[in-house]
Amino acid sequence: MKLNFITIAYFVICVVNSHLAYAQKNNKIKSFTKYSTDSLESISSKSLFDLKKTDRVNRFNEKGEKFGLWIIGETTPAEIYYKNDVADGIYKAFFQNGMLDCIGEYHNDLPIGSWLFFDELGFLVMKISEIKINTVKFKNSASILIKPKYYSLFKFYYKNGLISQQGHCFSNDINDFESIKEGKWKFYSEQGILQKEETFKIDKIIK
Image (tube, rainbow, N blue to C red):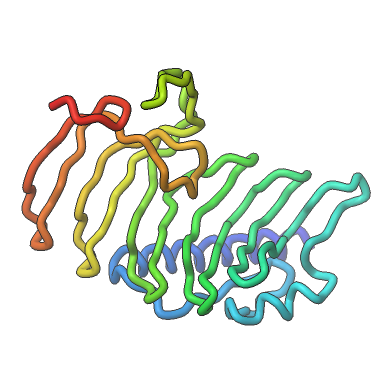
């Protein structure tokens, strides 16, 4: 039984990595299939609501802690895995039309690796990587002392798959699009040609 579980877990990781590689290479996902560690059946995003009605999701252990696959949201569902009441595993969110909105991974309640964000047509819009816990406090534009949770590398994309701009940002959540630019940013044309570089300090251009 232990060997079977390890084999299944390895298969799941390989499948997720292959989808991530496809998304980054082709810049578009037309559909997405999830593979459950409970049984190796493919589940489309539109069948999440049917799965939610079963006893295989949204479960608590004997300590009252969340574990396994949880499906949250109604019109725009998301699936997230828990271990001992903390997020730990692949996270996926979907648009109302069933297309993949974003995919990433948590470990001990913290986002890790690369997070990919798409539009409702399936084109890659943004990638967040190099996610680090922020240790810096500073005053925002309203002169309020804040300490954003994360400091990460943001990359935005054109529909042709080329990068439109990239640089680092402070943010309070991995899904927080009200991020604060910091440091050097690079801006490119749709042909991939570097157009300009700008240096930001707490979201203001200083150079």
